[in-house]
Length: 401
Ligand SMILES: [Mg+2]
Image 1 (cartoon, rainbow, N blue to C red):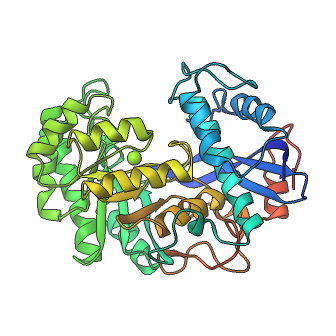
Image 2 (cartoon, protein in one colour):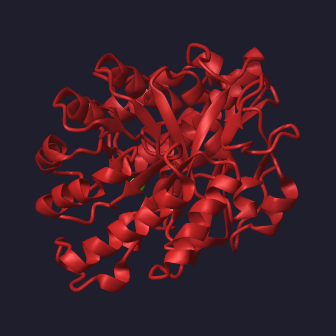
């Protein structure tokens, strides 16, 4: 079997609950890998702030290189594009001066996902079997609801938290930076003053009180704060027994996060845009408690499974960051199924029906009672929902089927 074509398709629409309860436009880029056998694979590729920043161009570049190649050589394809090869470069192999960051990694993530789907279909087995088999078939989803639109209304916090619980979720996340923006005194300072911190604690306490102590609640700082603020925040929030505090400071500074981790009573979670090389350093330096890779940013499912194994050797759990459509959500679920140290996968789009219905799952809903339930369909077990895709084609796009 040979690869004959790699194509992309961009869909757009609205995410009604957005960030902080404010609607936002959203985009999804899908990837399709075709072969001379008639079998094809589906994947999803990352975007950043709704822009593609060369990811599509990088997919086209890699796609041209893969025409005529076997879809089975997945690890070699990733390795060549992240690490290159030594001379003599025959035929057309990339040199060892390639990079493991940025759009090429995000492009490879989408392509690898489609290759895994394709190989699973060719071997008539689910993708989790290509990753070593499954530990579980019910994949715990944590619902990211950010914050209610009216942040100062404690009743809105209570209602939002209860809505999550009543829709079957046992694991939810809010955004610290969207919890009390009405109390921000200086948008350039990473320090939070007493009034804002008190409002953050009060509002999240209402959510905890509403859902009780058996629900998991996490909080994302979106890299907003400085070291002393992050440490103070972790201590103030400690009575709420949060599952984790995420990305307190800008995460390129590992030393800062390690300082926070050493003084935080709440586990510190990082890594939503990291690759394997970055996780090697963070895990090896004991700079975080929980890793949080995203299959759209690591280089794909194989790379994410490798990262999970690394963390498992250090007895560090793995959550999965995710702001994908149903394609990326199901793909990440296959990694979660094959990962012993998995503790929860993110989902955002509970209010954006179209994003969760981009692909069908053989009649199975995307999320059932707070879990993605995997079956034994070959590959990712997905078929594109033509009506939803056509209704959301971005300007100038054509449906690739
Ligand atoms: Mg985050």
